[in-house]
Length: 508
Image 1 (cartoon, helix red, strand yellow):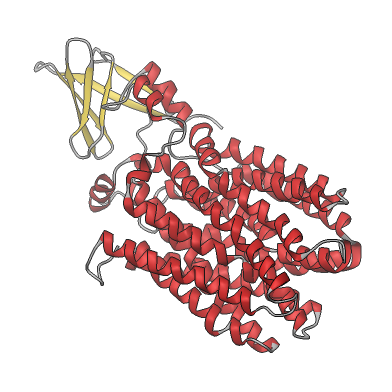
Image 2 (cartoon, rainbow, N blue to C red):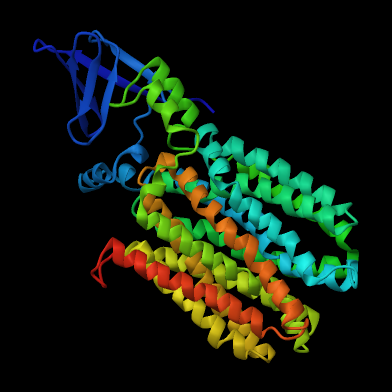
């Protein structure tokens, strides 16, 4: 793929100024003693560099990148008002990027969300009478924990080295982990392979696919984010029944190898469709060394910022957001992990029980898309408060009384819709608080790292409650635990809304 170039025509004027015309924007070049400053009169971009001597210079996109996606919100609004469609929503290739990111979410997170099927198989077949629910639950929990805990670092790796490179490395790690899991015969071996190693690879792909579409869209960023992360739910919809059938007919070894092959066949070609619209951290550092062209930029400033940008933690709203999400995640995965065994315990046949997880994932995909559309209109924080509280209600008033297959199906669909909407809202809220898109991967990673506390504690606690209080048959304690932590999260989010804007009906 050839690099695009931007021609900058700098014409010398008698008043010792240089004028640059780029699209609809006019820049004025002021000559100083040693450095020159190039200021955009229509936006807030300032470019500085060596003398141009009135010459026409062609600068490669990797060195001086004047991309619409890197403008401020005010600049984008002005461009949109001027009728510049490209600046408003980006080139059409953005939809190719959304599709590629959707596929990654579908395969990686679809597999993670289908762990409940594996858990039931391990408990009833592979490790029957050899391991407790608490021990088996840790396999899926470790995968989700590593995905979250490595977020600040994998997100920063993505921001610095680029989305495509980070993603392809992640696919390689995920595939290796599944092949090794196929030959694992002990629970501790699955901790290392299906748990730790797969979670590490998924972390690399997850934050890349989740943040890249934001570079291509501005007006409907919530919608495209919802479409992208809906892939996890849609993946779980078809992966869960297929995995269940393969496990019951072919065994875990064959199933793992098939899933590993699926990762390679679907994800490697799709990864090459990734294309960033902003310069990476490495490209920015190279540009600053060769031509410092933005006010305040310097090699020293970049080195002081650090690889992971933790300055977002000074924002009280962001701290409230991540704490609330940690509580949410403590209870969020319990239905995904336990709905299959819960249904079987209430005399539902295995195929229908496995379908519950699929319905939960499928409706979660719909919830993410719908809420992505809604939050662009009511605000991400408002959407977050509504979706989390609605999820709490489904646990207390639907799962608690779901004793028949019909009620279980209703609960699975309702929980998926509300829980999926929460995921979409939380990601959009973090992007709003991040401010700059070039640190979105790092900021979102920090949020997920704090959520590690919840994902590490949540499902194992549910398993321990089922083993002790429930005596392997009564799920009331699991439901109360999941609903209670969700309720606490709802209260924290309402506080965050109040801190942000005391107007109850404000769009925030």
